[in-house]
Length: 95
Image (tube, rainbow, N blue to C red; front, side):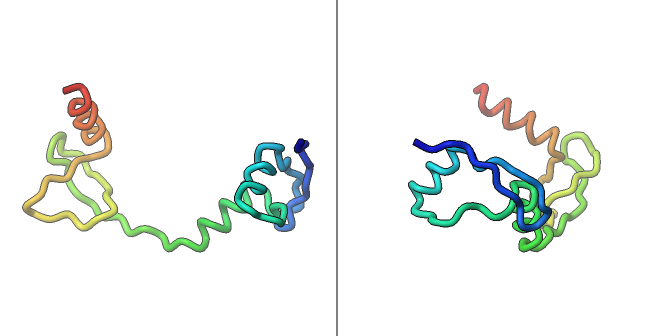
């Protein structure tokens, strides 16, 4: 029913494909307009509208390396670097 269409991005002028699957999704959601920007320009526009997250420095309670976290660390709670946190999650899942 739907066929891939080649559209031109109004932001950067690059051609991009509006796939049959994307067209079906748009129809299911009731969207009547085709996309006007390529995937990269849509992502850049979305990212520009979000405020940048503030990151805080902390010392990993497990290995002692510096960790950057999106919350203000508290003295009474341990903070883990991403590697140690992932290992802990793996161990919990294995139990």
